Length: 309
Image 1: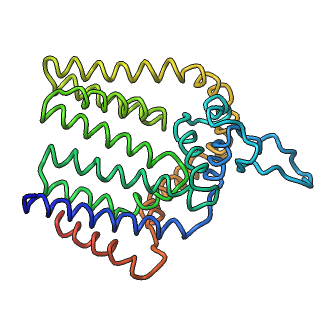
Image 2 (image 1 turned 120 degrees about the horizontal axis):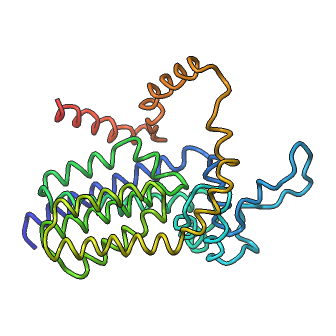
Image 3 (image 1 turned 90 degrees about the vertical axis):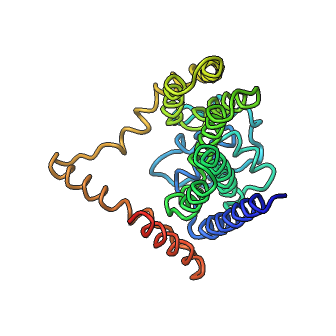
């Protein structure tokens, strides 16, 4: 193996280990939020049974809504997502993951951690193909140390998985653009472009952006095949999931709108919104559990600032 290749693999391995360490360390910091527990509940295939529990009265034996004991089969998740604004793929994979590795908090969070690590490798490949090894190394270092990435990678929600599919689509597109058309690259693009909106609805925007890139950047047979991959992805998404989107739209206003509106005067709402926006950088800071875990974050921030300046 050439020396350059050994260095490349070594750098990637070191960054992966640091990435995993920071995310696992952070995953032990907090208990599951309400939304994370709701995702566990949805992964059982029962829908959202907590919504039907009686209000303002003592429940003698509350049902274990997140337990897999006696739960419907995993494919029932697909048709039991009414009342929420989420596509099904993350919950289905989460269900299979919990059956393999257990039902406690850390195994559930380990799915997002794993997706984050895969996303890092795919991001490295995409940037390396487009801009070389040095740019790829810097990209994954920033990805590994970014506090927001650490937080997202330890949540039992679909963000890290959606990011994984997005990075996979970027890697496939980069290879089509720089290295040419092959069947495996076209298939990889189609798979990632299909899975992305089935994991999070924001993926629709990403797929549209990929389509625009194909039209502008690619030429000839490569453009036709790549656009065919995107059309296949859109068709699978619409045929397989569109009927359930209609069902979600009927109830999402009742479930989501109440907490999206605040009964306060407009000027107070504007001030509150500005304050929340200003606080975002602070709220996204990840606090490693051990003091040694702080140094990669601190060092990465200092180096990144030096490079940018």
